[in-house]
Structures are given as structure tokens and as C-alpha cells.
Image 1 (tube, rainbow, N blue to C red):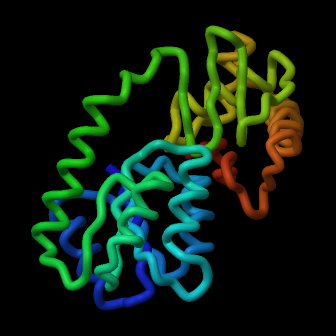
Image 2: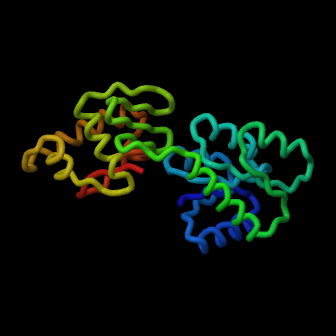
Image 3: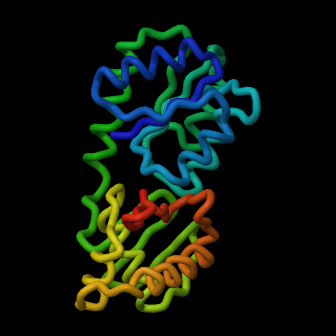
Length: 226
């Protein structure tokens, strides 16, 4: 499971990362808010731990931005003990609140409790629907939504994107794409044809090959997403 950790106090962030990794979590650690928000858009985060006081934008602002598109659990960290901070955090969508200094084992217990609750309350993922960050693709309804906007895709573009999303995190070779979509054996010009469709997909998704948010090129092999 993927946990986002955001705290500008390096010692605390590193300590939380250590405990999370010891429990088998995959950790995305940042010392600034803007970096964290960029991560949320491209990673399928399961839980976030946010410090309120950050050098660029506050943890409360990050929480509010996350809640515009995602519903995974958020635990707020702060050195303050004022009730107003706790109320504000919970009001804008935080699920729990831990005051510094805290015991790492207590934080880990809260992380696990929030994840248990979230997994219990969240409906099981539909067989023919995949969500990656702000992207949701629904095969049954032939619909693709990115940042709350419906993308207008051709049948081929949709099929390629669905194939990549269905295998999220794994490389899909050009040969696999061609075989699955056209049911024919790969031939020399297949790669250039698929590249054109990938380019059109990236344009519609406001993505790029140089700095991909979603579709990544694995040179000499194929493509992957997530």
C-alpha cells in the first residue's frame, strides 16, 4: 500500500518513513507541499500523513486540494495543540489528527486503523472500471474521465488506454497492444501506428513523453501507466 508523507522536519519525515517501511508500506516522502500534490496526481495513494506547517503551502491547503478528487484517508500532523486547528482539519476532510511530539507506534496504529476503515467502507473496484489518480476509465460505459472532465476518445484510443490502465504499473509491449486490439501478428510498421495513437492520447490528456503524468514510454519495449 502507498502512503504519502509530507513534513518539512526531515528527522520526523525520515522516522515516519522508517516505521512505515518496516510495516511493509511503500512510502512517498516530501518536505514541501507542491511536490506532494504532484505525486498525488500520478500515484495511486492509499493514505496521506500531512504536516500542517510547511514552507510553501499548508497541510490544510493540501488536504483541501486532495479532497477535491480523492477520498483516501488523511492524517494531519501539527506541533500546535489548539482545538481550532483540529476542527479546521476535520472540517475540510481530514480523517484523524496527531499532535507533535507523538509516539511512532501510536501513529502506525492510527494508520492501520484508518486503512481498515477505508477498505471496509469503500466498495470493491468494479471489474471493468479502473481509477489511477485523477483518471477513471469505465469499459462498460466506454467513458474516460480525467480531472472531472470527460475525454473524447476514438475507439482505438480508448482501447489502448484501457489496456494500459488494466495493466497499471506493468509494461505493455507494442506487440501486446497490436495483438489485443487488432488480433493480428505484429508487423514492422505497427510501432509507428501505435505511437501516433499514443501521441493523440497524450495530447487529449495534457500529458507529454518528456514529463509524463500518466503514459510512460519504456524505450524499446512498450508503454505503461501508473
